[in-house]
Amino acid sequence: MKKVALIIFLLSINFSVFSQLANNNLPEEDYWETQLTPMVEVNDMLRHIYSDPFKEDYINFIPAGYPLNKEVNINSFYGFRNHPVHKVSLFHRGIDLKGATGEKAIATGDGDVIDVGFKVDLGNYIKIKHCYGFESIYGHLNKISVKKGQHVKRMQVIGEVGATGTVTGPHLHYTLKKNNQYIDPFDFLFMDFERGKISMLNK
Ligand SMILES: [Zn+2]
Image (cartoon, rainbow, N blue to C red; front, top):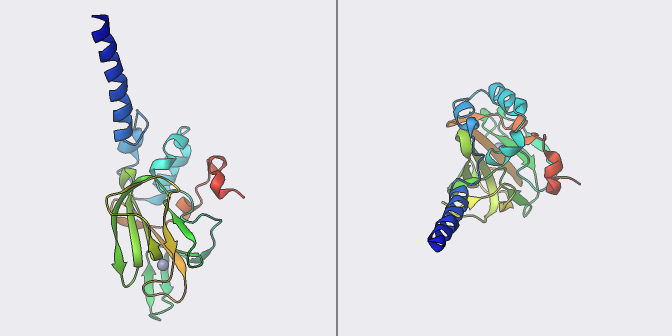
């Protein structure tokens, strides 16, 4: 009888480890799911994120920080601009970051690769679906190192900067979407409340 109890005990340990892995180690009490998921206004999201004393427990599950393995410099902001190639005013649905061909592009949060491919305006691109309705897109890549359906971790190398698609030179185009709407990635790029933990981004 003791043996049976031990086996049941061991199975229950295994099961809890497995179920933790299955939900990617999300905090047990995932109130971000009910609170952050419906939000589409950047200011509402920022207020929610920054005011949570337990934000460090959730940071890996949203796109936050640099998509490059270095300090970032912005070439072009989100919003209307004169397109450098098309020479007309177009809405830029992301931020362009300075980068040289071959530099590592990294995932800004844990998630699943939902699409990889080539589009004229994006070049070689990767789309990652994160928690709470977030999606991150990395464009003009020279190389794609992940496959559709693959789970990626925050700061994992996913590809290399390049100049594919309609561009004047190599850079990383970085887009964020929330509940299928484009949002300005700026405040998420510089979300640094746990910068101490991101040793890779510190010099
Ligand atoms: Zn761009």
